[in-house]
Length: 155
View 1: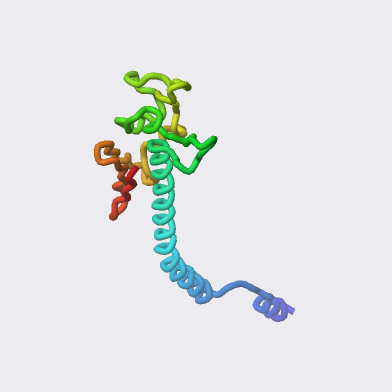
View 2: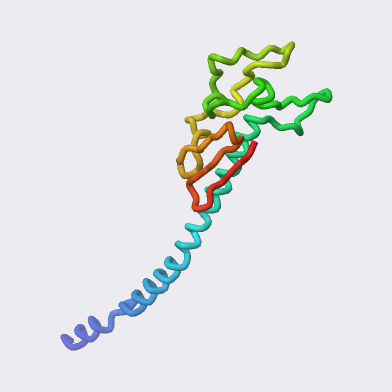
């Protein structure tokens, strides 16, 4: 009787993975991770470039306006430059009226008629990498220097 109990003990129905099977699964997961992580980095970089270009186009429209928006034969979205007569000296002028510029006059259609861009958290001042834009009103361009190839937008 004692012999039969010992045999039953060793013949228990045990299920699970062997150490070799677990090592193979871990190796396969490591290979997949090694292939997928660089691809993810490329996707992240391209999405940041796309977001930065989109934001820079919004800044361009805020400065120079959008000539395609017309009502009654007149341009409606004239931007800072169309309302004031010159480009802003800094990007912050798109959100807050500079003291040197008069308020908008509906008769003459001149003066600061902003804000020209959404100023939530001041995010319009930096690109997707949180690096400040280089704004050059004299050369009429906005530059993002965060990537290996800088992104330029002319207005």
